[in-house]
Amino acid sequence: MPATAGARPPDGAVREPTFHLTGTTPAGRLYWDPDVLRTELERFYYRHWLCIGREDRIPAPGDFFTTRVGPESILLVRDGKGRIGAFYNLCRHRGTRVALEEGGRGAHSFVCPYHSWTYSLDGRLTGAPHTKTIEKFDRAEFGLWPVRVETWGGFIWINLEPKGPSLKEELGTFLHRFDATPLDGLKLGGGKIYEVEANWKIIVENFSECYHCAPVHPSLNRLTPYMTGDNDAYFHEPGGRSLYSGGYMEFAKDYTSMTRTGYTKRPVLPGTTPEDSKRVRYYTVFPNMFFSLHPDFLMTHRVWPTSPSHCRIENEFYFSPEAAAAPDFDPSDAIELWDEINLQDWRVCALAQEGVASRAWKGGRYSEQEALTADFDAFVTEELAHKK
Image (cartoon, rainbow, N blue to C red):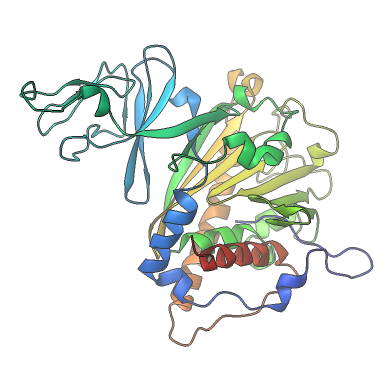
């Protein structure tokens, strides 16, 4: 799927930064080697804040869902005091999964299906049959292993690293870009889950350029031509590294929405300026979230690698409370167009995955339209090269 255009300014010069364009794209091993993926999970997915869904997915005490981060299963639950907790989904006795469903409502506790160890909604061990005479066994020390959890914009974020910066410390400048938009109140209007035969980095690389938009996405290119817009955030910033990159693309003619017609009856999101009503803002939040703010809705993608050559992508659409409450509310015009665009992307990403697995592939060259892609690749390869 597309991101910013990386268009040239009037004088024909390539927009900054450009130094990465002199290099070559990564070699094939970074896209098919299981050892590389294991390292990426440890350094990227287990050490940074990950968006995993909306707070209103678990609105009441006892509501829960599970999610996977690599091979790890994480349990999210709202406790009796209304707090959201996150835990590794495994019993402290023999490591068995304690929550077997993808989600549920009104749970009072979690009982391990193997030996019936029981955990409260806040993760405490409340029952462990036949352990009363066990020496030096303190139930208080054997609750579910916690995972750090925070919220922002109505979204739930987790971090599997026990220590480290808070969400605001890690993503503060990104979060403040959307202060004018009350994201907390947006309502889920629909979405799709995709299974894609491509390495997760190929998906991010594809999102980070619109060089492919004219041949691959004729509908998108008609609405927001690929040479419009600008990149305004890079992983390599002048003052140091950031954990997001992206920018915006501009609507052609008098189009107002990413729908097949280019128009919509939906109101713009609260806080949308006249300038932003003619733009779609696309950002990659490292390592795996695409945050795309349209004038009339917010679209997100979350990319979860399941193997070196496969990933699961969760695509969701959020609308203003006013739009969602309208009797004739119908988000299908946006969802259907983006489903078309997504499927076009997944096809070329799968073709690229096949190609980089070739014994002949040693890397390629970037075009002038791929500054964000080059920036992402450089960020990843530099992080992998560091000894940690």
